Amino acid sequence: MTALDFSGREQLYYQLYNRLFQGIINGTYAVGECIPSESELMKTYQVSRATARRSMEMLANDGFVKKQRGLGTVVISTHPKHSPQRVAKYSKKGKIATVISRKKIIEFGIICASKNIAESLNITEDTELICLKRVRYGGEEPYYLEINYFEKEYVPEMLNRDFSEESLRVFLDKTYNIQWSYAHQEIYSIIADNQISKILRVNKGMPLLRIKRVSFDVDDVPREYVDTYYLADKYHLEIELTI
Image 1 (cartoon, helix red, strand yellow):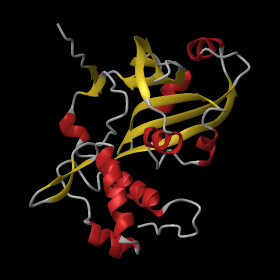
Image 2 (cartoon, rainbow, N blue to C red):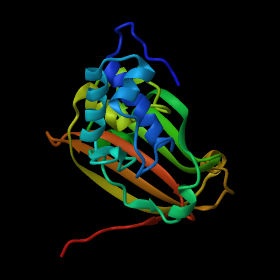
Image 3 (cartoon, rainbow, N blue to C red):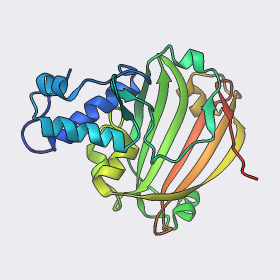
C-alpha cells in the first residue's frame, strides 16, 4: 500500500480514487467483488469520511462500482463508462481472467505531428504532440500495443503523470473535463514489422489487427489519435448492428 500525499499538491479524494482504480484494473478487486468500505478506507489511509465517500462516488460515476444492498460497493466494470468502446475484444475470457493485467510505458514524450496524424487532427505538421506508447500485458505476456497522440498545448499536464498506473481516460475527464462525442475507427489486417514484432514478442510477419481511432469532443473537434496493434490470435471483432 502506498501512503497518500498530504502536502496539498493533489486532492486526497483523487489520490484515493486512483488507489482504488489501480486495485480494480490489476485484479485486486475483481468484477463481482467488493472494494473496501468507507470506514475501512478511513482507517487504512487516515482520511475523513467525506474524502472516502467522494472517492467512492467518483468510482460509481465513472461506472467502475455500484452499491448493492447486503453486500457493499461491488466492482461492475474495469473500464470507465465514458471511454470509447473498442470493437476488438478478447476472445478467450477464461484465460485473461486468470492473469493480472498491467500496462508498461515504452515511450512518452513530445514529437512533431506526421502528415497523417496532422490531417486526422486538423493541425499543421510542425505541431508538437504528446506521444504515449504503452503495452498491455496479461501477466508477463504482451497483448497489444497502444499509441496515443494529443496536441501538447491541449493537455500539457499529461507529461507530469504516470499512465502505467493512472487511467488516461479518467485523467482527461477529471483534469480537463473533456467530454467525448464520437470516434471514427479504421480497422486493418496487417503483419508485424521488425519494430512491432520485438515489442509484442512475436515473429516478423505475424498477423496483427490494427485499429486507428480519432476521437472528437462535443464541439466536433478531433482531439485524440490512437493507433493500436492487437495480436490476432488473442482478439476478435464484435460489432453490434442496429436494423
